[in-house]
Amino acid sequence: MSAPHVTGIGLLAPTGMGVEQYWSATLAGACGIGKVTRFDTAGYPAVLAGEVDGFEAREHLSSRMLPQTDHMTRMALVASDWALADAGVKPDELPDFAAGVVTASSAGGFEFGHRELEALWSKGSDHVSAYQSFAWFYAVNTGQISIRQGLRGPGGVVVTEQSGGLDVLAMARRRLRDGAELMLAGGVDSGLCPWGWVAQIASDRLSYRDDPARAYLPFDTDATGFVPGEGGAILVVENDVRPGARSYGTIAGHASTFDPPAGSGRPGTLRRAIENALADAGADAAEVDVVFADAAGVPELDRAEAVAITEVFGPVPVTAPKAGVGRLYSGGASLDVVAALLAIRDEVVPPTPNVARLAPGIDLDLVVGRPRHKKIRTALVVARGYGGYNSAVVLRAS
Image (cartoon, rainbow, N blue to C red; front, side, top):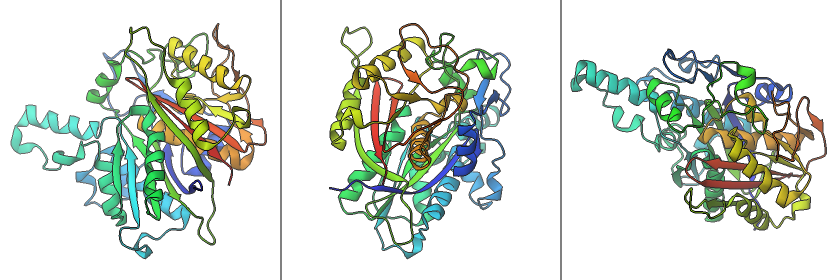
């Protein structure tokens, strides 16, 4: 069966809103990481994040929507608007039940939930919004996008943390094979509030440095953890390219695995996820022109990923543009898919910002400093989620 096409993209990232703004900043190696401004981080060990600058929800959404939505949902709604417009799709012209929505989520509407918990404990239960019943929920982006766009076809949500941004593409592909005409798929996330911040710190993977240029350094000898971020991307995925529309590329293969428990003595399964994705695409490792790495920024995780990539591909260009925006949880892999599709389109590999010296034991052809011009027909995107999730997606030029 033919691979589905990505025909539309909507995104919000710490380095830009919209495809071309984000892509220009990514090729320039821009860094969108800075001191957290959304709340006071005094007393917290982590103080940096990748925030989406300049996003004003009231400029894009009705006043009716604002009280019932978390910040991440507002961004997801706008991203879905932009994706459909980019694809030239008017939802009200689609047949009933022909189009659906699948999104990835890491935890739901943290900021909304934090605000309502504050109201509960400071003022009492009468002051808790009725919208708390769903605004925090991990499936809320799927529901709100479906309602806003009138998409009554297949729906779903994947909760596999960072891996989810790839896993939803596999879910969308299955729905298209089952008869859907169009799917919106992707992830948009945000947890930049005290409650969400504590939850992220608990992972023990965050960098506690306060210099944005030296905090998130995947594969670098000075890596100490990652910087969280917010944002992500929503994609329009279709089996066929409509007349007058474009295809950014095709989703040729996907696979996911789950690692055994830490301390079990059994090896991780990232390599198997990569190999299975290649097999699903009917591709040989030699066909892959570039790898977009998960890039945890945690030394032992970076080493494990570097080994898996090297064992499968040998020398291959590797990049991690997320070092300039932070790890966006469920939105991160979706944004990497966009970067990979644009790399295919423009025949250029974006650089990995800020990284200077590869750590001992890491033997990667990591693209740093400046973009590398290269004809790209096939790209691999890797994502790992906290708790043992591994996913890989193979993308091909149309």
